[in-house]
Length: 383
Ligand SMILES: Nc1ncnc2c1ncn2[C@@H]1O[C@H](COP(=O)(O)OP(=O)(O)OP(=O)(O)O)[C@@H](O)[C@H]1O
Ligand SMILES: [Mg+2]
Image 1 (cartoon, rainbow, N blue to C red):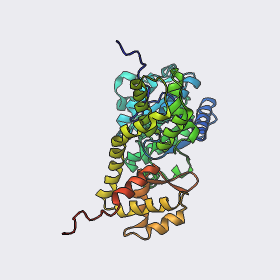
Image 2: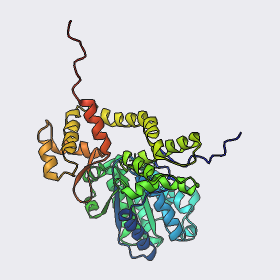
Image 3: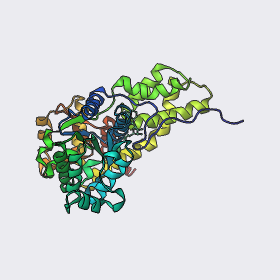
Image 4: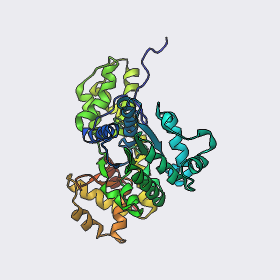
């Protein structure tokens, strides 16, 4: 008999739009304000930084922002999505920008350039004979009043010099037109920006992308079941959300497994009885995921530091202040600023908008403590 069970809607992975997106009003609202500012032309030059530990949903938020720009901008906002390599070469950057402009209805009417001539030539020849395509690009941005939103994902990977040059071009263009750059990256993004030359970046708006709230995490797990007509125990969703630490990647992982468990159980309902099976079935994937983070510390000889941080959080579940984290760093060999960057880079612990340090994935701390616990001596004493 054909399996009539609907396709699994959960999307564990990278950047894949979830069936139900857990909301973060504190991040979404300012992003929507950026779009309004671009549309009304009231936006000053705007820089926004979306930063947070891996797997929290920064790429998903950029996808959501693009949808909102298309919907609310009535097609008038050119949404230019970029990756760090695009910033390295001015030609590539221009190619990307023109590609995005081509897809934005109405905008080519305003482009008084020959798009077939090749991008560097296009900006050189048609826009004031400049040699640098970035300058040409800023010239064009200056002349055309169309709003442009640049979204750079994985921005922490960008070479600081290219990032600085790009931000300078955006800044120049912003003097004459509505333009905004949204940079998304791990908490290490701020270190990458500090290393660049564009000092005005500190005036950008930072938006921390942390774990979801308890109720949103529940909705991420439960909504797809409810929408498919397979309601269940509210407690089952809540228990799974708690076990997933309200962490978006684990929520998708558990959701996908729970869907399969419900399918094979024939119950057509997500029940609390299913929860242990889901947790058991996903434990290998979770441990692999933790192991990658663990190995990053192992490779650079920073496991004692990772362990010390984990023990501190085990003793007190509260976030740490800067002074507390600095005291902890002082117990370890090495430059404290570099050690702090190491912790912050991938979001093992990270500094949020309130200047508090919290674990990126709380359960990773348990894994580190478990793996670094002294082994009992396996050699049996001689009889
Ligand atoms: N708001 C959300 N609600 C539900 N699931 C989400 C949400 N945001 C992200 N996810 C899911 O979490 C996973 C990771 O998302 P995403 O790749 O966007 O994270 P990221 O922060 O960009 O990670 P990285 O730093 O590794 O690039 C994906 O499986 C995605 O479907
Ligand atoms: Mg991402």
